[in-house]
Image (cartoon, rainbow, N blue to C red; front, side, top):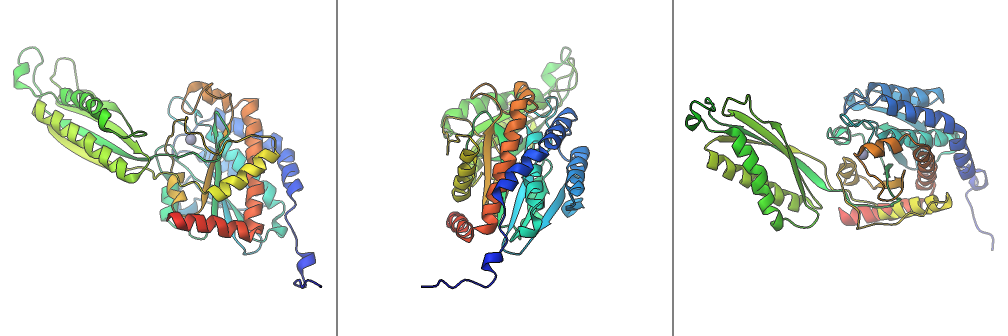
Length: 401
Ligand SMILES: [Zn+2]
């Protein structure tokens, strides 16, 4: 029997996987230098002008078409490699840093890992059956840049969104928590703290009592819920009964429903504290991030490539704590992965610690970034060429939606 094949089948160009890997190796010096440069000049959320410009320039140097100010976000950009129309894969680059502790979340490595994957694919642009884009996503640390991009339609034609994050271990999937921010402002009555304290009503006492009351309620919160706050205004002077005080809390949980329940507890505690001190309370809730919906189909394939590159990722690890990311919001819109790659020994240090910032510019960190670039490129190539993989990923996504 002669199998019928389309006439062009034999000529159909294929993405050369070995070349993808070799091209990342060839780009290694450039990628590492850029990762260190971004690390040395940390920029806070929405102020990542240098990182955005450097990454865009690196893509343009390779001949890629780059749009600045993407979707009206000054520190976002999109570079594209446009082949056929089979599918569109977005590889996401974060590059913002943290106040005081710089790149202690390793976003410099996320940025250059994504860039490396994109450039390797761009070099085979003519053979791509679909499109690949490098999407610069600013302000992951509390700014929700991805949510703004999402709301402005940046993911409307994307079939899969891929990224990795540095960590203390290799993990293909890991939950991240839905979160929300609650700002509590107390308004009391000032008075001289020595001459007539009885005439005053302390906003600070109410704010402090809020912390104590929340702690008293923790036993009623479900496993995995996180409530953590800090004082943003603790009064005006030592000799004035504080007229104003304020604190901010982040409330996180595995599901939006549990998060809402915990947020109501926080508000109740603040009301009780305000009542006790006879002060007024103003509550402002700011939306945070959604929980991460890991696409297991894509995560497994990501794992195959990581193993091929000598890593031994776990599929999940329930012993390790979870944070929150705006990639959670993206994962509710399109099939997404947010894999984790070790840049240090397990339990040595973790995100948002000073030692982790050191790891994010270490040789080990830079090598992990190259592994990420290769495996993201290989996965993107699979998504473009393997219709079955795309269909399975989509079916899984739709089942959860
Ligand atoms: Zn991070």
